[in-house]
Structure formats: structure tokens, C-alpha cells
Image (cartoon, rainbow, N blue to C red):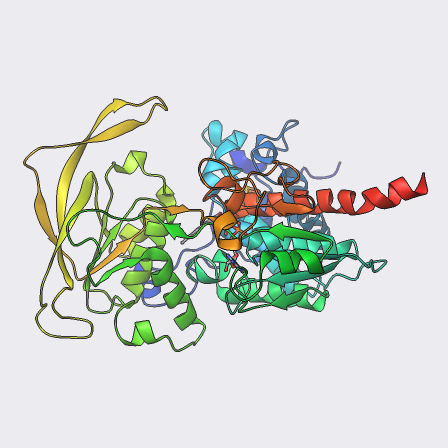
Length: 489
Ligand SMILES: Cc1cc2nc3c(=O)[nH]c(=O)nc-3n(C[C@H](O)[C@H](O)[C@H](O)COP(=O)(O)OP(=O)(O)OC[C@H]3O[C@@H](n4cnc5c(N)ncnc54)[C@H](O)[C@@H]3O)c2cc1C
Ligand code: SF4
């Protein structure tokens, strides 16, 4: 009888790929997890219990066929595992690295719930596609037929790129417009290299280029070209512009020098990692070296900022968050990584203003009007609100000053006012300013105009942007085919 390759969770413990030592990794921007060796990937995949109703799959936004690609990995059929994995996910190696698996697939793994430790789904997913790249199994798209219709995609983030890939597979002509000088959106300029190395993103961009996708970079729609002009040039337009308006701090001196936006800080750091010369980095404005850094916020962006500041050689890095560890939005795994790297978390703390002055010794960026301290109020958690979440309340008389010569605002993002910026009469937005689009197709209030990703959902996740992009491509194809179908009747 053939040996049973699966259900090894009873005898084989959960084992993540090796994590680099915090003392070593906190000096560079390389990813912190090593790759599985082949035998280890097979062993870990073989722990899957092959459930009849796989909750991991239903809780993956892409409904990845996880049990199948785990079984194929466990039996060393990696090329088939890759084929199954990429059938539902445009960028499996990216999701394997940066999905919050504890909240999605792995958090719903049945063997985790029976106390055996979840299957390391994300790490195996990354291993499969990294191996596929190494072996040349990932190829540019060659459509069976070329179609005449062209689709414009505004925004080269994961939502736009996933749609571009699907549309090219169907032979549609695709042009992607982006205001940045490199494609990838937040994969390129938001998320730091220690979570997602940049060549992983760039090889995907190169694959799309080789597949015939045209990229028009350094092109800010609304400034360099109007939305209407784009609409006039293409048969359909997809808006995938993400959300970039930073929620602000308030209180005295909230606009002082040295108080910066997380997106500017991270973009600058990522550009430096590409080898670009960035004036704000050289001048010290967006460089944490030698500084007492305070990051305000408790989400994934805040975690990326604190860990970037450590790597830039900050004197100290503190993260101020108004709730406690249990109630923060960021991933617990990232907090643990940050603590290992030397970040101090100051829970239940809220800055209400800043003092400014000349900082001694005079150094890069120091001077009058520059932030010197954050004035912090201590909080406690009160009664749960309507959503069940406990609201933070001020503890009167608990104020104190936190030394700071670089403050990074990581309080979340909101959508820019697209109808006003682009002068698009008729493009409906919700009361939160996100573009009103049908979930599942991305169709908006304008004919042949679609929207996906964060600009529809608000700040969300890469895996949801990919899902939206794929679904929307299917809807665009359906709509492009519609007139032909009518004509044929
Ligand atoms: C710091 C940070 C860390 C994150 N970490 C994670 C993580 O670990 N895991 C995870 O799943 N998610 C993470 N996210 C969220 C994730 O990055 C986003 O949900 C995802 O990138 C959204 O994809 P998108 O395609 O909708 O938009 P984006 O990735 O934001 O891409 C939008 C693109 O549109 C372009 N654009 C905008 N306006 C214009 C214009 N007028 N003209 C031309 N181009 C324009 C932008 O330049 C950008 O390239 C993180 C977000 C941030 C900010
Ligand atoms: S895409 Fe994300 S949620 Fe889905 S299986 Fe991969 S890591 Fe899990």
C-alpha cells in the first residue's frame, strides 16, 4: 500500500523558516526569514490534514486551493503545485511573504484549533513560487489571440497589476499609468525590504512588461494628463490609485519641523534601498540616524516605520499607541519582530502636542521650530463602543513629555478627493470618499470605468487588491464582449 504522505501534524511540529538573529537583521533591509530547504518544505506541507471543507481556503480572499498545493509539495510535485497556486493568485510569492496569515488562512487551520500549531501555509506558498522562478517556470504571458481593445489602468499597485495580468492573458492591450517612477505601488514604495525584498516585486513588473503591458510612469493623472483624455484614448478605464491622504496629528506645534508623514518616510527609505539619491535622506529630514524617534500609531504602517528607524541607526525608537497591545490593529507577529529589534512600545499613550526648540548638539536638520518633545497623555480603556471595541479614555493629570527629534505620523490613510482632483463629474464616491464600485466587478457609476483595491475598500490588504483586480478584469472582459454579442444576434 502507498505510504500516506499527509496528516503528519501529530508527529511533526510546526516549524517556520529560520528567522535571522535580531542583532544581525536590524542592520540591513534584507528579508528576515530564510527560505525553506526542499526537505523542510515537504515535511511542513505534509502536516496538512486535507480537510473535506478546508477553512483555510474559505478564509483566503483568493480562495486558494491550499490543500491541493500542500499535497503536491509534500509529494515533491512542485511544478504542479505552482500551477495550482498561480491559477488563483497572480502574486503567490508576495502574499506568502506579507499576508497577515494569522488572521486569514493560517488563523483558520483546523489543526491549529486542535492545538497542533497551524500548517505554515504562507511560507510554503512563498517557497513554491520562489522555486518556480528559480526553475524558469514563471513565464511572460503569451495570449492565444491579440484583441484590439485597450484598457487603461491608473495605478500600478497590486490591484492594477493583477488586473493587467488577467487582461493581457485574454489578449487585451493594457496601458498602466502611475505617478511614481517605478511600478508596484505600496509593494515598491510602502512596504519595506525586510518584509518584501524589492527584486521580488521588480521581477513581476518585468514579467508584465515582457507580456506586453505598457507602463507610463512619472505620469500623475489629473496633472500630467487628464482623466477625460485617458478615457478618450481607451475602451475602458480602471482606477486603482490606492489611498494616500494621511490622517493628521492635532495640538500645539503639530506642524513643527521633524514631524513627518509615514508614507514620505517609507518611500524615501525604499528609494534609498534602490540606490537612489534622495535629498531629504541626505539632509536628515527623512533619516532616523542618531535620532530619538517617536512613531505614532498601532497599525502595520507604524510597525514598518519603527523597524525602518532601527535599521537607519536611530538612537532610540518608541511607538506610541492609544490602546493596548491586545487592541492594536497591527499584526502581533510584527510587534514581536519589532521588540526583538529594539523598539519600545508605549501602550495607552496619546500625543496631544509638541514642544519645539534648538536641539543640541546642532546637527543635520536641528534648529528653531524643530520638534523636541511630544506631550503625551496616558489613557485607559473604557467601556466597549457599539462595535464592541473598548474606547480609550484620558487619565487626568497623567501627562508627561517624551523626548523626540523625529516624529512619524502613522495614523492611517484616507482617500484623496478624486472627483475634485480629476474633475470627473458623475464619478460617485461614498461618504468616506472611497470610489463607489460594485464589489465583485469594480463597476462604478461611469460607463466603462471601474475601480479596485484600497480606493474602493479604504486601506486594506494586498491580497484583497489582487482579488479585486482579478474579479474586475473578468467584468471588463464581459463588458468588452457585450456589444459584439449584441451585434451577433
Ligand atoms: C506601510 C504599509 C505597509 C503595508 N503592509 C502590508 C502588509 O504587510 N500586508 C498587506 O497585505 N498589506 C499591507 N499594506 C496594505 C497594502 O499595501 C495595500 O492594501 C495595497 O497595496 C493596495 O493596493 P492598491 O493597488 O489598491 O493601491 P497601491 O498599492 O496604493 O497602488 C496605487 C498606485 O496608484 C498610483 N497613483 C495614485 N494616484 C495616482 C494618480 N493620480 N496618477 C497616477 N498614479 C496614481 C500610486 O502611485 C500607486 O503606485 C501596507 C500598507 C502600507 C502603507
Ligand atoms: S494568499 Fe494570503 S490568505 Fe491566501 S493562502 Fe496565501 S498567504 Fe494565505
